[in-house]
Amino acid sequence: MASMAATFASITKPKPATFLDPHQSSFHGKSKPVSPPPFNRIQPTTTTKASVSASASTSLPYNLNSFKFEPIKESIVSREMTRRYMTDMITHADTDVVIIGAGSAGLSCAYELSKNPDINIAIVEQSVSPGGGAWLGGQLFSAMVVRKPAHLFLDELEIEYDEKDTFVVIKHAALFTSTIMSKLLARPNVKLFNAVAVEDLIVKKGRVGGVVTNWALVSMNHDTQSCMDPNVMEAKVVVSSCGHDGPFGATGVKRLKSIGLIDSVPGMKALDMNAAEDAIVRLTREIVPGMVVTGMEVAEIDGACRMGPTFGAMMMSGQKAAHVVLKLLGLPNALDIVDVANLHPELVLAAAETNELAQA
Image (tube, rainbow, N blue to C red; front, side, top):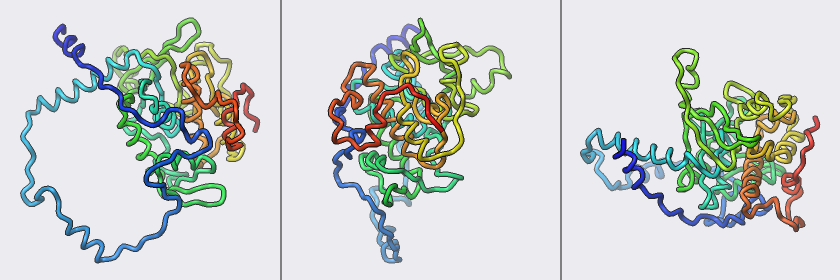
């Protein structure tokens, strides 16, 4: 055990790379300059036999007819996986921000926060596959509809879309989810712990100070096995992005109610896209000391309408939650902007701090 501790102690964290300017964001009403410029309208293309033939004949850096892998010992594979995962667990046992839930709001929050390489972020997702409901549009259809001006966030991510007057359409929702995950998880200050469930919160003197975790499969089988105690992760700020009510949904705010930190969780109201998306972003905030709520979980606690198969509010709520966290950490953020003359009206609304409940 001592030698294992020494091994972990000898591992030094890599120096964070410099990413995007943390003071620039699509949250300010402007898309970040990207290179090459983003494609705004998808142009239909016709695949010809000639192009397919040319692609198939392209030379590869290896011979597929005699392909052979380099040899490796099975124990090396085990050590590499174990060492890296345990190092991540040690690093994030006491971290800056824990985000519960890796749906569209949680991922957007993490992406925005990760622009500051000095902030360590742990994302805890109960599912093996992160992304929540953002792999598809409504009713298992493929396309994702995003109302303007949230399309500016898509420009920043360099995601192609078909542009309409007041909204844009991504041809497949998976393009958004896979793109934001690939950009986010490549950053050294972010760790995704998927297949891990948050079973409880750490609360001291009325302030949320972290989360209680366990393997998701263990959490689902407490009734079938003997006691299986959890682990913990301390954090300066916890962001709850658990989605609307369900088996693992709205667990953050439901736990706050059960321990008496909030009075009620009224649940979301019936569908009204226009009322819902504005309300979700506007009401994204620190709900109790140390805990910020974002995404559809906001609707559960404030009784806001559901918005159905439109995703802009999830992106903007996640992005706003990131700036709420930055403010709580005492760092520059978009919520402290004094001159809002150049902000888009919807983003001014989104940045407004209020404790009012949503109106149906």
